[in-house]
Image (cartoon, rainbow over all chains, first blue to last red; front, side, top):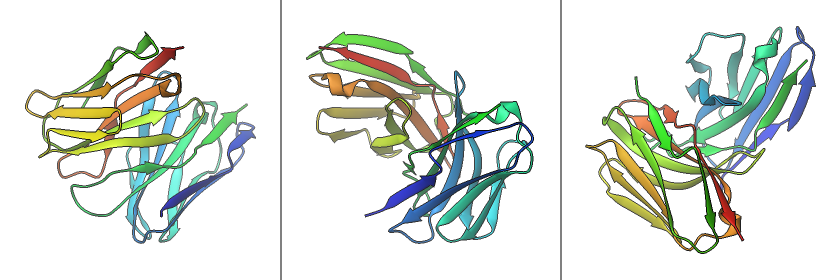
Length: 114
Length: 112
């Protein structure tokens, strides 16, 4: 069966510090991978998605970047965090089958920027 | 641009009651619609996926319907239990897209 991992589970970082969040998927190959942010009162916002190694699409201009160095690894990064980067970050995967796209989510990372 | 709306934003019901959660979307050109459950501080759990060609899907006490032409979906929960308390999210995948557009959710409280 498929499993999706995220770490760390929680993170408190000062403004201006770098960020690296990691997501890995087990039990599937060539998944589509997604990063979402959930902020209070704003719902889930898609940040990045990837359909293959090295292929990243960005949905929202922002202070963050994403990379996919391996088939089942997706990393969210920032060089300098802003207060507005605080939120709950969720990684998700889906099969690459067009028109199916049932997405499965990881446990999330709670990021607080102080 | 696709917009997804969920009404009500919060709902409180006594245990054992049947209930309906509503979801509407503005663009009927969708591949599918997915219902999720989110417990406080946790990730999302997929409950049901309805393809655009389907009218409904069932899993245990849950039944989701889809009326694509009118841009509506409902999630029916039978014989509600306190363990059903959570936020329920509806999301659609637009035709030709890999992206999910989410509603803001309905927070359900089932009172023992």
